[in-house]
Image (cartoon, rainbow, N blue to C red):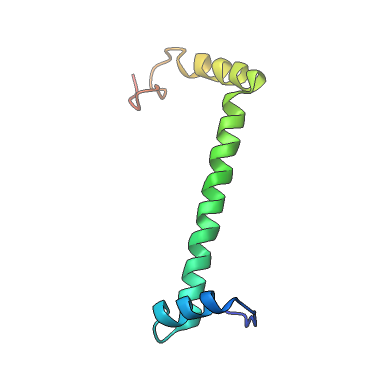
Length: 84
């Protein structure tokens, strides 16, 4: 559902939107902000993954799970994506 938003921008930003926004400026601004939101999410995801990569407690738990997955029981998932 679309919501209405009235904002004030610098003249330079206004001219940019007027020049690049085409007939539907709202759609253009929405697309730009959606892209910004996606990039912010990706940055946060990368930050959290790096944090997890440096977590010795998590690494130990994952090592235990790897041992469980590689226990050699027939028909179980292996790390290469195949079953044995």
